Image 1 (cartoon, rainbow, N blue to C red):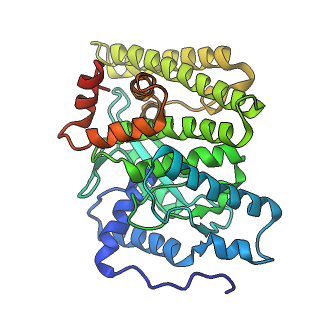
Image 2 (tube, one colour):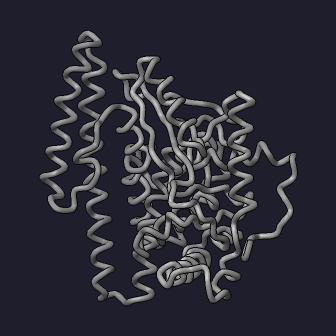
Length: 360
């Protein structure tokens, strides 16, 4: 078909790597099921063989709407900015486009006990333990979620907008990403490029909260570079970042309350009953704090799996932000320091020691 990428299929020896890359952000696991591995490899191969070079698409007169064209050009600028101004790793990521057919690229399933803030983990040789499973087929994700529910666990199934291959392959821009406004797109691209640049094996929460900070702050810096300090969008993005900090603090309070409850001598049934009171408190507090800016948390059906998912992206932000502040609010310096820390056996502990902080 016109514009279809003509490239060699990845070597068979890299099929395991295909699964590993899917783990990083979409939530695949090291499940030993041959059927599971084959299905995820098949899905990843489909993405790799059907993606199309963005530059080629932009040269064509047809095939893209005006909005898609403008956003893909913006992705190119975002990518250059992330490499040149933030210091993120240069790869071929986001130089390709993949049409998902108006569907999520993948689905993420996670689980946790009903009376403990402790995720269920699955192990994988390259990325270590991960607190989620990922699926290219929604029906497969639903089946796995239902099986976990039958085990008496809290569960969460959510669509995945993007994931990182850590540089093994050129991650494409997914068509569903272009449904967002340009600054959200910038945040996603920079977030995923951060994973490619810095990734600690088996430390999902550390990785995700760091990428969250770099993605959000990077989008602000890009907006400032393109539109100037006084631009209204810079103020809007900064206000959104401030709300994220407040949300992180609220999550810390809720987690503290739940840990006290779950660690008590009450019966399991009583703990489950009382946790709903804490869920309601947090959602009421959230609506009061953010008003018209209140998002999905306000109406989400909360359980421990849902909360742990929120926590992976938000609870480590304070640690990373404090280091960012002490480095003069300089993202490039932050990346350099974290890359240096990655040489140590326990990078978070090294960073905590260097900056006099409590490890995340």
